[in-house]
Length: 121
Image 1 (cartoon, one colour):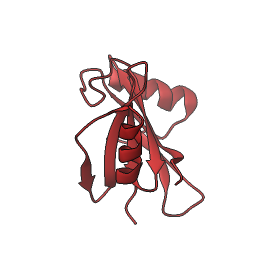
Image 2 (cartoon, one colour):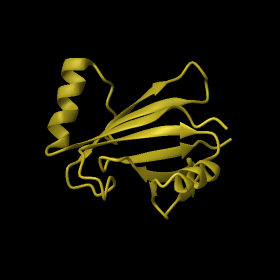
Image 3 (tube, helix red, strand yellow):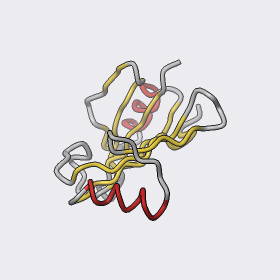
Image 4 (cartoon, helix red, strand yellow):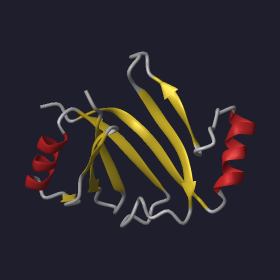
């Protein structure tokens, strides 16, 4: 079974996300949209990597205290979550499914929350 097959997104917390978005737009030329992030298309016409700055008040990364979270693309979310649990990893009991795909989370040994994403077919 393949595990991680790509990076689906990088998310950064910020104390002042409006100004930080502007800095990245101005200094690095990232085309940040009104929703606070940018899309980097893949060579695969159906895929993209998301890059986003989030308000510092966001609790989306909780329980991690890190100011970032990486989203990794996976082929079979449920199977991988089962394997991670069997390996003793701290896997969030919550998962989400929407038109965007399936999402699950695991904490790394240093307390960083990692998002696992199975894109929709």
